Length: 343
Image (cartoon, rainbow, N blue to C red):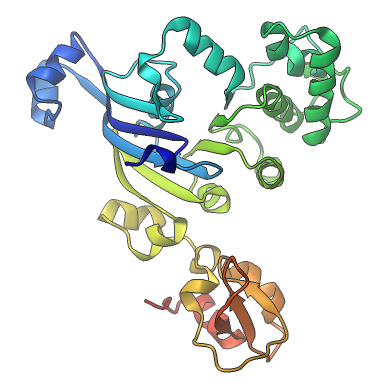
């Protein structure tokens, strides 16, 4: 892989739990099968994972409980040590970093948000958000200025002096997000950050997350077991099963071309209108002028709000605003009724 193509990548990453796991992997040429693992009493939490995560994208890792997704992210952030492989951050092998260098990377270049908020109960919102900056040794005036900026960014202005116990679950999660953003990270890890929230609050937090990303354009690794959440948020998704990455692709690619029966089952009940983009259902251009232009990356359910009451054909344009196709109401209706995308 070209190092310039990614912000974070891993090559042949394994994480085994058991005795002398590194010697075991060497003995089996870093390719042990299930029988060898079982015979040695090894648990293969992460198995030979290769990924590239591009600068500025939301990369979702998903799978059922026990699939290895959280363990993989802890290997990528080196919260736990992989048994084998390489993890490249900005082209440098993170596994070769010494303790002091790793601490500096985590303090200045990585942000992390987990399912359990882990707020400090004796500190206010301002105190919690500015805490990682205090650890960095930043002067109080500067760290509080930066903390207030991200508090406003996540919609908690006016609650700077509240304690965690005085906040709702969604507000507490916003504090956790603000705290991780205060260090202005290049890379942002989020491990099921909304799964403990009620459905309505969870939806609100997803909307807030997307708003933040539109402003900040962070490189994000996001873990979830919820495919609906994944397709709302992801640029690309990696689906894991039994410690392995089964398939990586856009939500559209996973739905239209599942690599295995497992992926097909995972995506089977997802409405196509939530996943398909206009690029996949557009028709050839038939004229020069159109009443409106829609992005080829727009999803069908979103486009329906523009097209459902119109008998006109709409232009479909690429990122350079170049006309590449057209779309009409009938094409959208076909998707909602179960029709297939263009191939």
